[in-house]
Amino acid sequence: MVYSVRSRLKTRSPIPRLPLRPPDNYLRNAMVATLAKQDVEFDILLQVQADPYRMPIENNAVFWPTRISPRVPAAVLRIPQQEFDSPEQFAFARILSYNPWHCIAEHRPLGNQSRARLRMYKELSTLRQTMNRVEHYEPTGDEKFPGSS
Image (cartoon, rainbow, N blue to C red):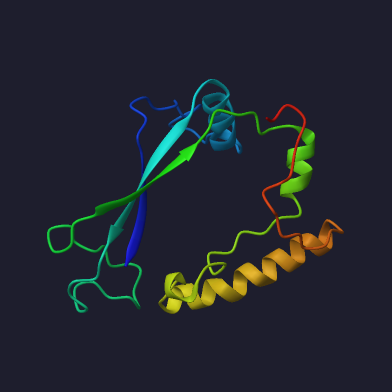
């Protein structure tokens, strides 16, 4: 199965300095500006493997054809309007780690590239947290930050 995400917003944020190199934080800046004024919704789409030869799991370079297996909407992800760029939130983000394997076994990434990513994610997370002198923290969802509701 392949997951994809599609924004429901009709407007797009301009990318500064194109065709030259955009600023390092242009995506974060666009998120800050957008979420400061409105909610954002995304469609979560699924594509099921219908042909193991034309839709291989072991080769991420192969684009799965939608004429064989169309993307099907499965859920809506809603991010409410909010402020998320306080110094406290940036400090909190420095102790977190993203890991796509933090899920139930049936949803874990498959394929050779994903197996390589698993070790790389763990090593980079450990390195970053060691360099920042922070211990791994598992968020609870109860965290509160100035300016958030």
